[in-house]
Length: 150
Image 1 (cartoon, one colour):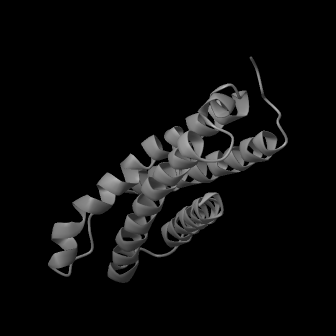
Image 2 (cartoon, helix red, strand yellow):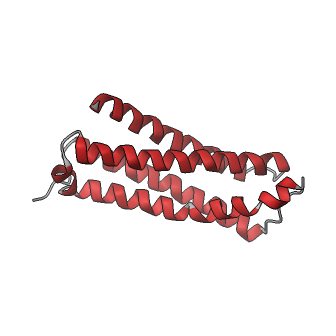
């Protein structure tokens, strides 16, 4: 079971990173009906991946691996969780924007998105990717026992 959960943790993490990267690429292209629909679909994959990643990660912390006491006495783990929740909170803005496009897209119309909204969505996705880099650093530190305190 620990091996299966480790696999699922990595699989969902890679899916999440891929979804964020695809969002960034789509937000860097010309805005079309097709790209708007793709952004909505990719954002759903991102949300599902993030939710599954959190659930699987918490299962590993509390029921498998080294146990909750080990993780909750590790500064790198706290930093990793903080960065994950920061990225999750930031992702709310693009998600809300994408959901608001439903009516326009159902009518076959391109949603009205201001330059400011578009730039903010791109900035948010950039920050999410930066948070992922921090999460990876924290994971490597945890794997080497760095950050442990008692």
